[in-house]
Image (cartoon, rainbow, N blue to C red; front, top):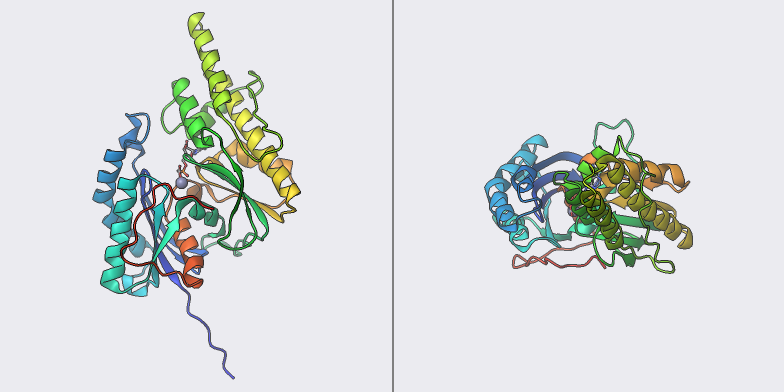
Length: 345
Ligand code: KG4
Ligand code: ZN
């Protein structure tokens, strides 16, 4: 008897939760056919952070061009797409609405299923995505896994026993890791976004120059970065009072080392405690070189960290998570609303 093969499912992902307008096409949740990201960083840099009104207006200007480009790069038309996955939240309401409305318009006009995806779930699924030109497909993450999610708005550790199920073990009690990078960069006079600026300044800095505090919060899987931020501020004030030049590179490197130390040690301990098979690290801060190197150096657990292009906000991760929801049967109604404060679990 002849075997029937299911044709691949191609999902168009749309992401507009913060300051990147993005669209991508991913096949079967894993193969990246296109990935277009229009960054607004230059627009927001002058404000030292994301200006919500400016962000939503810019999304409106760029979203249809970005979607067209994603289809063109994948050499596909809307007729080849099986479903539209869109970020529903968390994020800025005015920004989310732009992506949501574009997704609904396409879903309605083409008769395609609409799938709302949690942005944080998207970050996790970025670890499933690989480019088709790889010699061998990247092995998929294996459950149970411990996922460290570190972005500009969130920092949490989740135990993931199977697709689309999350048990939040702990998270930040104050600033998210990316937020701490952004705020400390501002204190050190480094440009927005702070993560890449601190990483760059750290290259020539001594990570042991300042013994910045590490909030271990023993007995929990929580984090806290506000004490660390205050410690940096205290040193800045002291140097200013003494009219001394701020040792920006040493301070950046010492701050980065403190953040990395806490994130890595806690995640590895969670993986041991919950007998996870693997560790997954995702979100904008997972682009940090020191964090990536520390994970690879400090544990024998297999560690999945997305390629740099998929660490910060993108739509490939939304298309991937959308695929797994699509195959599970999720179909959302066309009156689906955005969910700016939506939690993962
Ligand atoms: O995931 P993401 O693009 O957006 C959110 O969902 O928040 O993360 C953005 C955050 C920003 O706080 C940015 O400073 C941080 O990720 N980030 C980094 C690096 N690249 C981006 N933090 C540390 N090192 C980096 N190389
Ligand atoms: Zn994000």
